[in-house]
Image 1 (cartoon, one colour):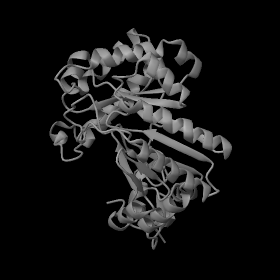
Image 2 (image 1 turned 30 degrees about the vertical axis):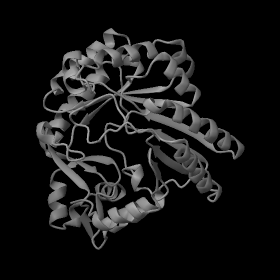
Image 3 (image 1 turned 180 degrees about the vertical axis):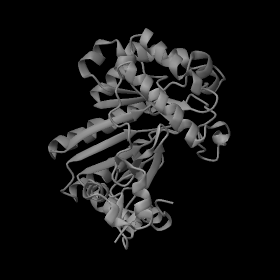
Length: 365
């Protein structure tokens, strides 16, 4: 008959034990239903379920067929539903960075992508597009190190690739993840001309806290440089003309979580809160850096994030995706059609990484 999906998360309301919230991580939908319904499901007393309850539970896939292999179904659905019209490419033009953040899992080196590698990368991407007529969009993410330390590479790539895209009726979009140390008005204008219309910047609290965490290689703080650059960019005529998306990332652990309200108030006072998209990211172990030693637990972070989202909402910044939406691709590197380029080589995904994950990953456990 039926069974409760292993992707269902059920929580009894603390204010009313007779009701429960049930969230389907499989479909991204939530239902408020009587708690006793789950006793009926557990005991397979299907006749005790009202028809509308049963229909909603099945529609949201909180209830599935008893013999359904959900893991295999999800993997097949994800593979089939990926958008094969978009070629995703993440490019690291340099391994260099001015900062020495304790939670960074990268090893920095003073290496910038050579013209030879750049041309090979351009040739690779062009060839993929020309041999796959379904592609309608190329999406480039500039990543580092610190990508603005290789701004010339970004410009050269754009000039060549955008011309190619125009000639072949391909849409070109681009974004960048930067520490903003080099995000001067001059460089910002260059990014706008290169159609980099989304910029992610990290600020980890007040000046005092940020400067203890995101320090330069010579041990100096970076807050003033980053924040002054951000203010100048947002209050510029260039920003008003292009209106790019500015994403402000706050990396959170047990040492700075209490500063979120202070930082939001600071952003408001400097008249930039309504021009940035604030989001919060938990600091985790990455690259064997031991950063998780001071991390919040998943539960602690979730509880605090709810408070911060409410704070953003009460101050006029509305996050439309308060509940996780159903995604067929958790990271672009898992996509069979994705590309990763570095300062030293071009790595063609070709599905190998996807298949490795597919074979090893047991979802829902």
